[in-house]
Length: 277
Ligand code: SF4
Image 1 (spheres, rainbow, N blue to C red):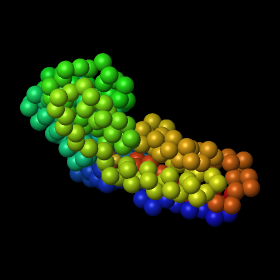
Image 2: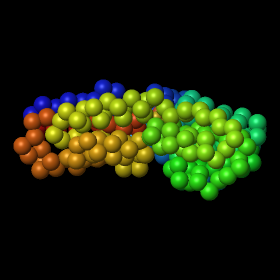
Image 3: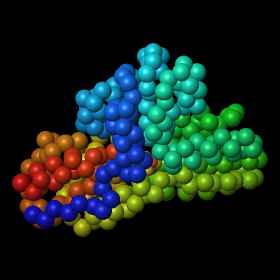
């Protein structure tokens, strides 16, 4: 059985940077150290950070002092201000690409645009970007959600960094039908796009595709969805222990890819296990 790994599988630039910042903080900052929410959407990495003394809190109210680390997909403006007001040491690991979307949200809304974020309403990154909008903002999961708008003078479209290009394009097209002036800024991250392209290409060449990453990772789940569209024998796993021999029956070529929040060591373990099968 031939096992092929997609180019650029695993940690993206922003996640690698955030992890590095967190481990550096664990070495240099006096305890307690917390990340606001799990640092990345990968339970195995979060567990390792915990062993180094980086705890997880869900709310800033739980942090009475010490250091707080903000995740690669960012926090809300209110949380940022609150941490500073309380005198906490802040390690801001927000990915520069997410920061860019936050800046567009702020500057475009200040210029009077109704800002539409193409994304998942409940996702913390989207909540963060939304908090930078002065006045009213809108989160749209699809173009249909703009259909009820009419007579908008100025409308701007940006995107959650992990969104599908197709959804972004469709929202922009719909925006042109409901607003007089439309500005669109593609804030989808290249890391996501490249991973998607290369994973789908590989899924087309193999008979079984394994996608590794946290079940709570949006970008890993999307990778699995895209791969499944071209190769129905696609399986999303978090660790090598979940591999099922039956997936590989009669299979000559297996492809492996991993989401942007999946560490290299997990990828290596899964690959070794597949090779054993
Ligand atoms: S996927 Fe892109 S935007 Fe998100 S953390 Fe990675 S590099 Fe940054």
